[in-house]
Length: 190
Image 1 (cartoon, helix red, strand yellow):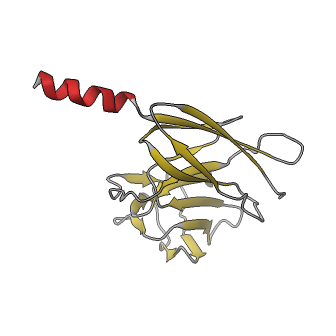
Image 2 (tube, helix red, strand yellow):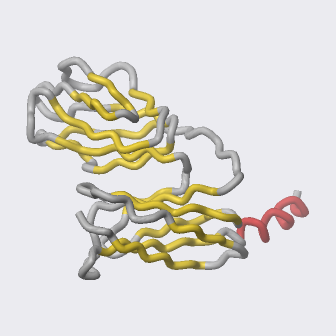
Image 3 (cartoon, one colour):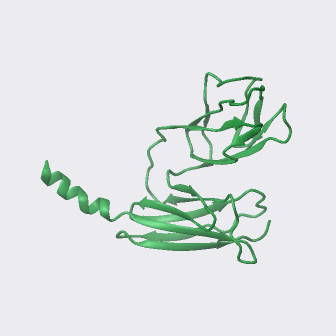
């Protein structure tokens, strides 16, 4: 058994890290953005978890949720009022009937794309679910996001943010041997 662990250890140590920044035309970081890296020529396993889009104080929490294609999302209502969650997005059209608590069945997001959410009862409630064809994704903090544990290979790196009119061109990157690489995107404008 020790021989097997010894053989696996070097492979695990070679995972790469990608640090991604997104800035506007003035060089200011764009808050609330997400990034993801799609590996080239690699079959990815389906997601094995359920994500949560809660409703608290008549607000969706989190405001932006990034998930892998095929992920089931539950929509608990932590408020003491009823909500009716819906989306008309091409990536996932659905409507949950007026409810309190947690609906019995989660919603499975089976196509990539940006899904905007609303509540038929509370017009000011809005949020986004960004569905991506990869398990390698992260939200950008105040300055950057870090995608770690990336296997060696070629990737196409994307970014998205609320209010984006034109997607910044995806950037190709090749990662190998545990390297740490930085990418910077500039937004073409909001």
